Length: 190
Image 1 (cartoon, one colour):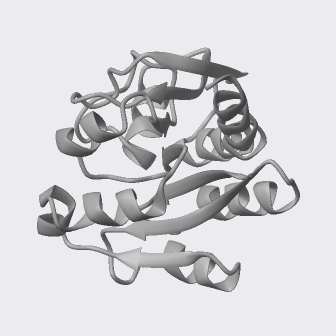
Image 2 (spheres, one colour):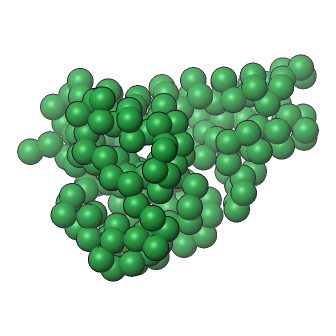
């Protein structure tokens, strides 16, 4: 029986699309649902086009017992993947699915983590501080932003003339290559 993956995303969904396509090429696991807190998020269109059930939910539904938690219980995920999901993840879901929620962060935690540190704000901080390297961190989610146990980090070297845009490109390459592989590894070792 295939392992079941549920993805949460708030934005365009390029990582979600990459994960869906990666697992569509395997018999090991599949993305069974994509959930978003933004009604017009491109991730919902991407999921639908790839044949994945998509769900929009409100912030109230995220934190209610009858909302997202109920959807997740019906979905029976082996893993819940946050791929550009910008809201703090609810403790009731974390309690129901212990050590089954993972996130990707576009920097080498603990640097550049925490509330408000996502997307371009992370890359701008990396450039401003003249970092010699950056990368991605895939970690378990706990009740605090970006503080869960680290599963994997992948690094990329930066030059002196980087811009937030060039850093973002380098980080995206790492995300697309490694995020699906690490998800598979977590599922196989779980």
